[in-house]
Image (cartoon, rainbow, N blue to C red; front, side, top):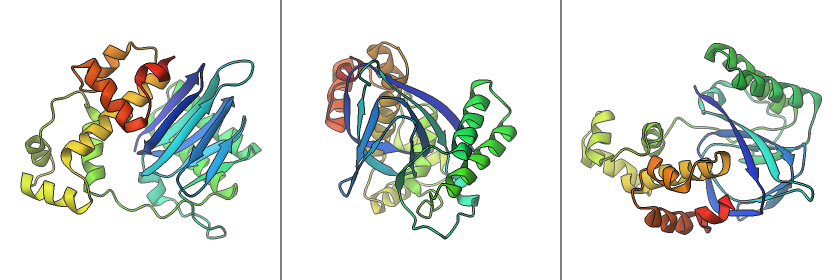
Length: 250
């Protein structure tokens, strides 16, 4: 089980298409506004409100700065294991993502996890704090769609995410999963994807996070995500998210 804290900051309006959410996400808007759309509905998340997203979602995302300063948000990312063990209330219909208002239970439990990640605390203590946050979400009326055990693409994604800059080959991944390359490709094809597609998704998703949450130079980010050519990185990034890395960094 992994838990991470990400702080997002933007001086100018950001628009990104089909942003992947690989983990369970709970984000609180600190300043400005976040807007999201999934093809079926659109939602705005105002200051003090929470965005909750289940793993596997693709959302169009827009971050809007406040009138008197930059856009800011804090995001807790949790791997799906804790979702699988949580017994959610059956009082509400399950959803893939939701916008929730502030409440004392939600505010305090989110701050509890955030503080634990900033210190940082031992993993066992963090797990208890995350469970507290999940209970607060349940009390706030959130219920996620049933989360299944990781499919093959997700298993590959988890391994790739540890070292996205590595020169990965399908043969090495198949060996780590204790199967033949043909079996790996067949299983991924059954999920309408491929090893190269999953690898690029992981690399670009990592790059998107680094651009928004760090001040690293774009050339360094490209290298850290496995792209030796900055121009190729910029081209692939724009094809994936509909914007250039330099436009987000502005």
